[in-house]
Image (tube, rainbow, N blue to C red; front, side, top):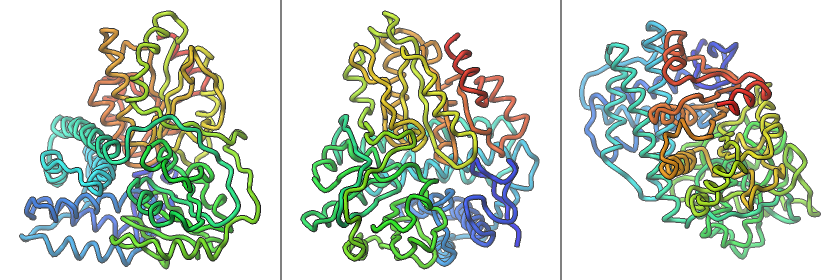
Length: 511
């Protein structure tokens, strides 16, 4: 059976996966996800705009993000649920998008993949009770437009509108997280693991972690974050739990090695699950939109008893275990969201004006296994000592265990949080530009981004909507960008693929 998928950075030969996904997705699973996407577009065209359908669209799109759902049974069940809510005779096949002319395919893919990433942020907001019907309605509008024959200029406008709406979703999620769990505060997080039973929590969902922490308190079980859950340590209402001990391992793509025979239960709260190896498949649990064949799935009741019992059964390490990051460090610092950074914005601006800070780099995004991602480690290592590094998402694991020192009391490495916390970086840039009375593009600020999946796509669209120029993107450019569309982005926004750290630093510092 054949498939076609080119939505992630590691797609086969930089063109598209046609036999099996590089992510581990089988052809049948890929085709089912295409069928689900087609049904969601039909629902947007022939379904009522109501809460049930909005949730179906958001969670359905989230289900099709790379490394979220590998379980055919659950996808088939979801397709049937969507089909029941389609109220008129309609037929749409997403394969018509893959088969159309390359420029149209490119623009519609940008919109669709941006919607998928945006759906993740919408999902996380909604589970905390934060919704906005006006921006939710954009899902209907954009999916309807994908099914139409539209000229290039209309699709380009929709690409930028997708970025605009995503900014609103990131703002809403920032509000949901901070009002629910408190404003992030700087914290030092250990990578070392204490002896005894423990649970590893990976994914992105703060609510799932909060519920697990509550259900495990006073049970003698320690909780460790993994991957994009690391920033959770900065939230006061999560950090208050004394058994939230530290962070296990590094970024998502290393899980098959890091989880190998680990004596702990592993809970996947959202995406970034890789094909599960036999050495730890008996201790993996999924919840929310994540599902994997033959794994125990925790339903919406969020009773984590099976996870807790498995952690007690496995018992954890017999002795304390020293673990480090990629560069040998065992302490990670988190908690530099926009409110924390802006609280010392005067010091930052004074340092810029005095020349103590020559440049600020945002180095972050999705990590991945493709060779060449050591570029980001080398870039940070080679960045002059009078520069500040902002970072976010799991790309930071390439360098977040390094001690880069301080400038006038300001840490040179500021971890702003998860991928959705790109909003914090944007907020800081906007506020500094206001104080300095200049545009963001005139600031001594450069974006050096790594991308892997669709949440990175919607963040990129937001940066383009804001008119941010000279973005460095890598390790490769998206396979779904045609040469004509890429040229438009290069001409209008000066977006470029990364070269070498030395070349890019020289260029960016000369601006």
